[in-house]
Length: 163
Image (cartoon, rainbow, N blue to C red):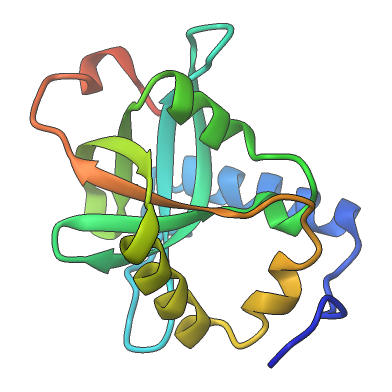
């Protein structure tokens, strides 16, 4: 099993990659940069939350896998110490919008997985990333496993994926 010594690129590289990835998705209007999970590989989706302080839409690209109708991600912030802003936003305002490959758009509610559900999803992430434990050991707090559940109520009008 991996330890806290799992290699990561420098923080500046991770942050630059996030910005470039988001620009690719924005410039291609979602035709590039988003992909579905396949077999033992995670997918990438665009999540738009409402800023906890500003109330403005905030978009990020995050990794996920699917569990039934739910989309499962991790609040990892590139394995840096702070909680990612998107997770803090979801805790304040659970309503969000996801964009998936192929132009699929869903309204969701975000929450933390708990108990046996968290363990089951954590194990699935272990299957997708053999260095999971080593990366998680870099963080001073437990990494939240985030469940994005379908939400049929019309939150999407208030959240336009422009950031």
